[in-house]
Image 1: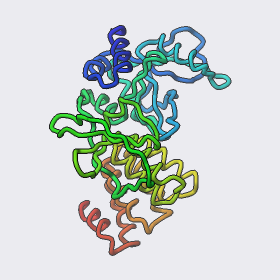
Image 2 (image 1 turned 90 degrees about the vertical axis):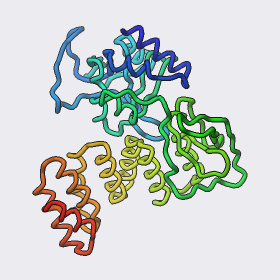
Image 3 (image 1 turned 60 degrees about the horizontal axis):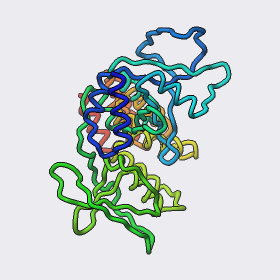
Image 4 (image 1 turned 45 degrees about the vertical axis):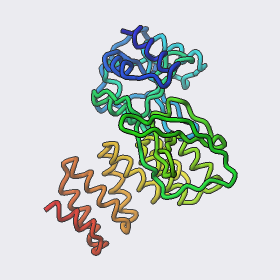
Length: 343
Protein backbone atom coordinates (compact mmCIF):
# COMPACT_ATOMS: atom_id res chain seq x y z
CA UNK A 1 0.00 0.00 0.00
CA UNK A 2 1.10 3.56 -0.71
CA UNK A 3 0.63 4.58 2.92
CA UNK A 4 2.89 1.78 4.15
CA UNK A 5 5.68 2.64 1.70
CA UNK A 6 5.43 6.32 2.57
CA UNK A 7 5.66 5.51 6.30
CA UNK A 8 8.74 3.34 5.75
CA UNK A 9 10.50 5.98 3.65
CA UNK A 10 9.92 8.60 6.34
CA UNK A 11 11.07 6.19 9.04
CA UNK A 12 14.30 5.41 7.15
CA UNK A 13 14.96 9.12 6.60
CA UNK A 14 14.41 10.02 10.26
CA UNK A 15 16.23 6.95 11.62
CA UNK A 16 19.07 6.25 9.15
CA UNK A 17 20.46 3.32 11.18
CA UNK A 18 17.07 1.60 11.41
CA UNK A 19 16.84 -1.81 9.64
CA UNK A 20 15.63 -1.46 6.05
CA UNK A 21 14.28 -4.95 5.40
CA UNK A 22 10.64 -3.85 5.65
CA UNK A 23 11.30 -0.88 3.35
CA UNK A 24 12.90 -3.07 0.68
CA UNK A 25 10.12 -5.66 0.88
CA UNK A 26 7.50 -2.97 0.43
CA UNK A 27 9.43 -1.47 -2.50
CA UNK A 28 9.37 -4.80 -4.32
CA UNK A 29 5.59 -5.10 -3.99
CA UNK A 30 4.57 -1.46 -4.55
CA UNK A 31 3.95 0.62 -7.63
CA UNK A 32 6.57 3.36 -8.01
CA UNK A 33 6.94 6.46 -10.17
CA UNK A 34 9.66 8.32 -12.06
CA UNK A 35 9.83 11.87 -13.37
CA UNK A 36 10.21 12.26 -17.12
CA UNK A 37 10.57 15.14 -19.56
CA UNK A 38 8.87 14.68 -22.90
CA UNK A 39 6.58 16.25 -25.47
CA UNK A 40 3.13 17.24 -24.14
CA UNK A 41 0.62 14.40 -24.38
CA UNK A 42 -2.41 16.69 -24.58
CA UNK A 43 -4.53 14.91 -21.97
CA UNK A 44 -4.48 14.38 -18.24
CA UNK A 45 -3.91 10.64 -18.27
CA UNK A 46 -2.43 8.45 -20.99
CA UNK A 47 -1.27 4.85 -21.07
CA UNK A 48 1.65 3.89 -23.25
CA UNK A 49 3.48 0.56 -23.23
CA UNK A 50 7.15 1.12 -24.06
CA UNK A 51 9.32 -1.28 -26.03
CA UNK A 52 12.18 -3.07 -24.29
CA UNK A 53 14.74 -1.25 -26.46
CA UNK A 54 13.12 2.16 -26.15
CA UNK A 55 15.15 4.93 -24.55
CA UNK A 56 13.02 6.91 -22.11
CA UNK A 57 14.00 10.34 -20.74
CA UNK A 58 14.32 9.92 -16.96
CA UNK A 59 15.06 12.76 -14.56
CA UNK A 60 18.27 12.29 -12.54
CA UNK A 61 20.21 14.49 -10.13
CA UNK A 62 23.97 14.83 -10.52
CA UNK A 63 26.03 14.25 -7.39
CA UNK A 64 28.05 17.46 -6.93
CA UNK A 65 30.89 15.60 -5.21
CA UNK A 66 31.25 12.26 -6.99
CA UNK A 67 29.43 13.15 -10.25
CA UNK A 68 27.20 10.07 -10.38
CA UNK A 69 23.51 10.24 -11.34
CA UNK A 70 20.93 9.68 -8.59
CA UNK A 71 17.43 8.93 -9.87
CA UNK A 72 14.48 10.10 -7.76
CA UNK A 73 11.93 7.31 -7.25
CA UNK A 74 8.54 8.28 -5.86
CA UNK A 75 5.88 6.31 -3.96
CA UNK A 76 3.01 8.31 -5.50
CA UNK A 77 2.11 10.82 -8.20
CA UNK A 78 1.61 13.47 -5.51
CA UNK A 79 5.25 13.05 -4.48
CA UNK A 80 6.33 13.64 -8.10
CA UNK A 81 4.31 16.87 -8.21
CA UNK A 82 5.74 17.97 -4.85
CA UNK A 83 9.31 17.34 -6.09
CA UNK A 84 8.76 19.51 -9.17
CA UNK A 85 7.01 22.29 -7.25
CA UNK A 86 9.43 22.49 -4.31
CA UNK A 87 12.43 22.32 -6.62
CA UNK A 88 10.93 25.04 -8.86
CA UNK A 89 11.87 22.92 -11.85
CA UNK A 90 11.16 24.09 -15.37
CA UNK A 91 11.01 21.75 -18.38
CA UNK A 92 12.86 22.59 -21.61
CA UNK A 93 10.94 24.68 -24.15
CA UNK A 94 8.29 22.66 -25.95
CA UNK A 95 8.30 19.87 -23.37
CA UNK A 96 6.63 19.17 -20.06
CA UNK A 97 7.15 17.11 -16.96
CA UNK A 98 5.37 13.74 -16.90
CA UNK A 99 5.20 10.98 -14.34
CA UNK A 100 5.75 7.36 -15.33
CA UNK A 101 4.28 4.56 -13.24
CA UNK A 102 5.96 1.17 -12.88
CA UNK A 103 4.50 -2.11 -11.70
CA UNK A 104 5.93 -3.54 -8.44
CA UNK A 105 9.63 -4.31 -8.67
CA UNK A 106 9.99 -3.37 -12.35
CA UNK A 107 11.57 0.07 -11.95
CA UNK A 108 14.95 -1.18 -10.74
CA UNK A 109 15.89 -2.97 -13.96
CA UNK A 110 15.00 0.15 -15.94
CA UNK A 111 17.28 2.32 -13.82
CA UNK A 112 20.35 0.12 -14.28
CA UNK A 113 20.53 1.38 -17.88
CA UNK A 114 20.81 5.04 -16.78
CA UNK A 115 24.28 6.41 -17.67
CA UNK A 116 26.50 7.01 -14.61
CA UNK A 117 23.81 5.46 -12.40
CA UNK A 118 24.87 5.94 -8.75
CA UNK A 119 21.64 4.83 -7.09
CA UNK A 120 18.01 5.64 -6.38
CA UNK A 121 16.78 8.47 -4.21
CA UNK A 122 13.47 7.54 -2.58
CA UNK A 123 11.60 10.84 -2.32
CA UNK A 124 8.48 11.41 -0.26
CA UNK A 125 9.03 15.10 0.46
CA UNK A 126 11.99 17.34 1.21
CA UNK A 127 12.14 16.07 4.78
CA UNK A 128 11.98 12.39 3.81
CA UNK A 129 14.63 11.35 1.28
CA UNK A 130 16.47 8.01 1.39
CA UNK A 131 19.42 7.07 -0.82
CA UNK A 132 19.88 3.47 -1.98
CA UNK A 133 23.23 2.96 -3.76
CA UNK A 134 23.45 1.18 -7.10
CA UNK A 135 24.94 -1.95 -5.50
CA UNK A 136 21.73 -2.41 -3.47
CA UNK A 137 19.51 -1.34 -6.37
CA UNK A 138 21.11 -4.12 -8.44
CA UNK A 139 20.01 -6.68 -5.84
CA UNK A 140 16.48 -5.27 -5.90
CA UNK A 141 16.44 -5.49 -9.72
CA UNK A 142 17.08 -9.23 -9.33
CA UNK A 143 14.16 -9.53 -6.91
CA UNK A 144 16.45 -10.09 -3.91
CA UNK A 145 16.28 -8.33 -0.56
CA UNK A 146 19.60 -6.60 0.20
CA UNK A 147 21.17 -7.89 3.43
CA UNK A 148 20.93 -5.71 6.50
CA UNK A 149 24.66 -5.88 7.27
CA UNK A 150 26.89 -3.13 5.83
CA UNK A 151 28.79 -3.70 2.60
CA UNK A 152 32.41 -4.29 3.62
CA UNK A 153 35.47 -3.64 1.46
CA UNK A 154 39.23 -3.73 1.83
CA UNK A 155 41.39 -0.65 1.34
CA UNK A 156 41.75 -0.22 -2.44
CA UNK A 157 45.02 1.74 -2.51
CA UNK A 158 48.40 0.69 -1.15
CA UNK A 159 48.99 3.84 0.88
CA UNK A 160 47.14 6.90 2.11
CA UNK A 161 49.21 9.63 3.78
CA UNK A 162 47.47 12.50 5.54
CA UNK A 163 49.01 15.96 5.98
CA UNK A 164 50.83 16.50 9.26
CA UNK A 165 48.54 17.76 12.00
CA UNK A 166 45.34 16.32 10.50
CA UNK A 167 42.68 15.84 13.18
CA UNK A 168 41.11 12.39 13.49
CA UNK A 169 37.87 11.40 15.21
CA UNK A 170 36.95 7.85 16.29
CA UNK A 171 33.57 6.49 17.38
CA UNK A 172 32.60 2.90 18.31
CA UNK A 173 31.21 0.85 15.43
CA UNK A 174 29.63 -2.54 14.95
CA UNK A 175 30.47 -3.50 11.36
CA UNK A 176 28.00 -6.36 11.17
CA UNK A 177 27.61 -10.04 12.11
CA UNK A 178 30.90 -11.89 12.51
CA UNK A 179 32.94 -8.69 12.76
CA UNK A 180 34.83 -7.79 15.95
CA UNK A 181 34.00 -4.63 17.87
CA UNK A 182 35.63 -1.79 16.00
CA UNK A 183 35.73 1.92 15.46
CA UNK A 184 34.73 4.37 12.76
CA UNK A 185 37.35 6.88 11.63
CA UNK A 186 36.42 10.37 10.46
CA UNK A 187 38.65 13.15 9.16
CA UNK A 188 36.54 16.27 9.79
CA UNK A 189 38.65 18.53 7.58
CA UNK A 190 38.11 16.24 4.58
CA UNK A 191 34.32 16.54 4.52
CA UNK A 192 31.16 15.25 6.11
CA UNK A 193 28.90 12.29 5.41
CA UNK A 194 25.45 11.10 6.42
CA UNK A 195 24.78 8.36 8.95
CA UNK A 196 23.22 6.09 6.33
CA UNK A 197 26.53 6.10 4.45
CA UNK A 198 27.90 3.89 7.23
CA UNK A 199 26.14 1.08 5.36
CA UNK A 200 29.13 0.95 2.99
CA UNK A 201 32.47 0.61 4.82
CA UNK A 202 36.15 0.15 3.97
CA UNK A 203 38.59 -1.47 6.40
CA UNK A 204 41.77 0.51 7.14
CA UNK A 205 45.06 -1.26 7.99
CA UNK A 206 45.62 0.48 11.35
CA UNK A 207 46.95 -1.17 14.52
CA UNK A 208 44.62 -1.92 17.41
CA UNK A 209 40.87 -2.33 17.09
CA UNK A 210 39.36 -2.93 13.65
CA UNK A 211 39.11 0.48 12.00
CA UNK A 212 36.57 1.35 9.33
CA UNK A 213 35.68 4.38 7.27
CA UNK A 214 32.56 5.13 5.25
CA UNK A 215 33.42 4.54 1.59
CA UNK A 216 32.23 7.95 0.45
CA UNK A 217 34.24 9.55 3.25
CA UNK A 218 37.30 7.57 2.14
CA UNK A 219 36.96 9.23 -1.27
CA UNK A 220 36.74 12.62 0.43
CA UNK A 221 39.86 11.81 2.44
CA UNK A 222 41.68 10.63 -0.68
CA UNK A 223 40.94 13.96 -2.33
CA UNK A 224 41.93 15.87 0.82
CA UNK A 225 45.24 13.99 1.11
CA UNK A 226 46.06 14.61 -2.54
CA UNK A 227 44.58 18.12 -2.89
CA UNK A 228 46.00 19.99 -5.82
CA UNK A 229 47.13 16.70 -7.35
CA UNK A 230 45.56 16.10 -10.76
CA UNK A 231 48.18 13.56 -11.84
CA UNK A 232 47.38 10.24 -13.45
CA UNK A 233 48.41 8.54 -10.18
CA UNK A 234 45.63 10.28 -8.22
CA UNK A 235 43.06 9.56 -10.94
CA UNK A 236 44.09 5.90 -11.02
CA UNK A 237 43.73 5.64 -7.22
CA UNK A 238 40.33 7.31 -7.32
CA UNK A 239 39.10 5.08 -10.14
CA UNK A 240 40.45 2.00 -8.37
CA UNK A 241 38.61 2.99 -5.18
CA UNK A 242 35.32 3.59 -7.00
CA UNK A 243 35.52 0.25 -8.80
CA UNK A 244 36.50 -1.55 -5.58
CA UNK A 245 33.50 -0.05 -3.75
CA UNK A 246 31.16 -1.04 -6.62
CA UNK A 247 30.41 2.63 -7.25
CA UNK A 248 30.33 2.02 -10.98
CA UNK A 249 28.17 5.03 -11.87
CA UNK A 250 30.62 7.38 -10.20
CA UNK A 251 33.52 5.55 -11.91
CA UNK A 252 31.81 6.03 -15.28
CA UNK A 253 31.33 9.74 -14.55
CA UNK A 254 35.02 10.07 -13.62
CA UNK A 255 36.08 8.41 -16.88
CA UNK A 256 33.81 10.67 -18.92
CA UNK A 257 35.28 13.72 -17.18
CA UNK A 258 38.81 12.52 -17.96
CA UNK A 259 37.79 11.84 -21.57
CA UNK A 260 36.52 15.41 -21.94
CA UNK A 261 39.92 16.61 -20.71
CA UNK A 262 41.67 14.69 -23.46
CA UNK A 263 43.05 11.58 -21.70
CA UNK A 264 41.37 9.15 -24.08
CA UNK A 265 43.37 6.00 -23.34
CA UNK A 266 42.90 6.16 -19.55
CA UNK A 267 39.22 7.00 -19.90
CA UNK A 268 38.43 4.23 -22.39
CA UNK A 269 40.25 1.58 -20.33
CA UNK A 270 38.19 2.64 -17.32
CA UNK A 271 34.92 2.73 -19.24
CA UNK A 272 35.54 -0.74 -20.66
CA UNK A 273 35.95 -2.04 -17.10
CA UNK A 274 32.77 -0.27 -15.95
CA UNK A 275 30.71 -1.63 -18.87
CA UNK A 276 32.00 -5.16 -18.28
CA UNK A 277 31.27 -5.08 -14.53
CA UNK A 278 27.75 -3.71 -15.03
CA UNK A 279 26.73 -6.12 -17.79
CA UNK A 280 26.61 -3.54 -20.58
CA UNK A 281 28.19 -5.99 -22.99
CA UNK A 282 27.27 -4.28 -26.26
CA UNK A 283 28.72 -0.99 -25.00
CA UNK A 284 31.86 -2.78 -23.82
CA UNK A 285 32.37 -4.60 -27.12
CA UNK A 286 31.80 -1.49 -29.22
CA UNK A 287 34.13 0.65 -27.12
CA UNK A 288 36.91 -1.97 -27.10
CA UNK A 289 36.80 -2.64 -30.83
CA UNK A 290 36.91 1.08 -31.60
CA UNK A 291 39.64 1.76 -29.03
CA UNK A 292 41.79 -1.14 -30.24
CA UNK A 293 41.75 0.33 -33.74
CA UNK A 294 43.18 3.55 -32.26
CA UNK A 295 45.50 1.96 -29.70
CA UNK A 296 46.56 -1.45 -31.07
CA UNK A 297 49.46 -1.57 -28.60
CA UNK A 298 46.94 -1.81 -25.70
CA UNK A 299 45.99 -5.50 -25.71
CA UNK A 300 43.49 -5.03 -22.85
CA UNK A 301 41.00 -3.66 -25.38
CA UNK A 302 41.24 -6.83 -27.46
CA UNK A 303 40.95 -9.17 -24.47
CA UNK A 304 38.05 -7.34 -22.82
CA UNK A 305 36.29 -6.75 -26.12
CA UNK A 306 36.59 -10.44 -27.03
CA UNK A 307 35.09 -11.48 -23.69
CA UNK A 308 32.11 -9.23 -24.27
CA UNK A 309 31.67 -10.45 -27.84
CA UNK A 310 31.71 -14.09 -26.72
CA UNK A 311 29.02 -13.40 -24.12
CA UNK A 312 26.99 -11.73 -26.87
CA UNK A 313 27.30 -14.89 -29.00
CA UNK A 314 29.65 -13.27 -31.52
CA UNK A 315 32.56 -15.72 -31.27
CA UNK A 316 33.94 -15.17 -34.79
CA UNK A 317 34.23 -11.43 -34.20
CA UNK A 318 35.97 -12.17 -30.91
CA UNK A 319 38.41 -14.53 -32.64
CA UNK A 320 39.19 -11.95 -35.34
CA UNK A 321 39.82 -9.25 -32.73
CA UNK A 322 42.21 -11.46 -30.75
CA UNK A 323 43.99 -12.62 -33.90
CA UNK A 324 44.66 -9.00 -34.85
CA UNK A 325 45.98 -8.33 -31.34
CA UNK A 326 48.18 -11.43 -31.52
CA UNK A 327 49.74 -10.28 -34.77
CA UNK A 328 50.38 -6.85 -33.22
CA UNK A 329 51.68 -8.22 -29.87
CA UNK A 330 52.79 -11.85 -30.44
CA UNK A 331 54.45 -12.05 -27.01
CA UNK A 332 51.33 -10.99 -25.07
CA UNK A 333 50.31 -14.02 -22.99
CA UNK A 334 46.80 -12.77 -22.18
CA UNK A 335 45.99 -12.50 -25.87
CA UNK A 336 47.37 -15.96 -26.67
CA UNK A 337 45.48 -17.50 -23.77
CA UNK A 338 42.20 -15.82 -24.74
CA UNK A 339 42.62 -16.88 -28.37
CA UNK A 340 43.39 -20.48 -27.39
CA UNK A 341 40.27 -20.62 -25.24
CA UNK A 342 38.14 -20.02 -28.34
CA UNK A 343 39.50 -23.15 -29.99
